[in-house]
Length: 355
Image 1 (cartoon, one colour):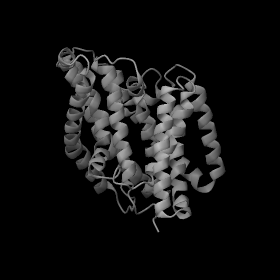
Image 2 (spheres, rainbow, N blue to C red):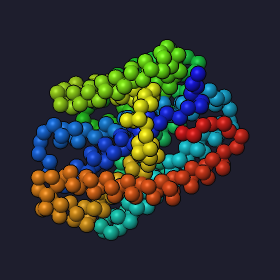
Image 3 (cartoon, helix red, strand yellow):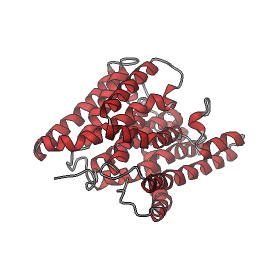
Image 4 (cartoon, rainbow, N blue to C red):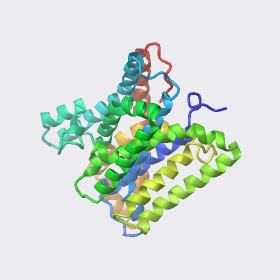
């Protein structure tokens, strides 16, 4: 029988990789300056920010999954948890910060000491007007850090009083729907995004029970259907139910999509290419805005649009994708992996599984 402590879920890694690519396409459209005719394709592209809540659900699940069968609440395990998170997140984030400073220096932009301190200290999630940080796309890492701070308490509640945890989910859903009607950058606040982390944690708790209810073959069929329906619901929300009603379709679609990948093991989703994308996902997420801006600085987007006026964006996104994956491969192997290994060496007497 499968247990949470033993099996790595490669389908989830693949989804993480595709979510990172979706965000990359989203930012390529807004930063690349290449016009796309209004239509169904453009509608899908401009909702690429959906990749971020998908990250949050996966994060909530993965962190819970890694310690689900452990005696987590002793001081040693708590210390090890934060050590591993530090070496997993901070080094590449700081590297992206340095690259941003270089880019600002080249563009003769003023560098504010206050903003730099907030970014490096990860206090920016708590300061209104500065929650996006100096690292492009770094706002979501700030929200992740808030989740890490609250995770021990949330996990304890999930373990000892599931009714309170479910109550928290209902509160988070209310905040999510209420804030979605406000146009005030509510997405930058943890309270708005909390529902996705909580759902990921709940999925971890429910997964082992679902595995016991169905045979492997039936579970594969159910999970594949969940993935397909998740994609259909998300697209339906984009194309048909825009504006306010879309938040319901976004939440429902993401739940089905992530839930399906927790069980599906077909080669369409689980293969070497998708596994690699999953490994590179964090680097893809942090490196892609800088790569896009660098290519724009070179004037590549203008040159492409001149030669390919009708297909300029497709050509540009292909070049961006190849460049980002190439850069991400380097940052993963020369920054992420060494520091992950260093983090492991700092962990003492811990049986926590790899996140």
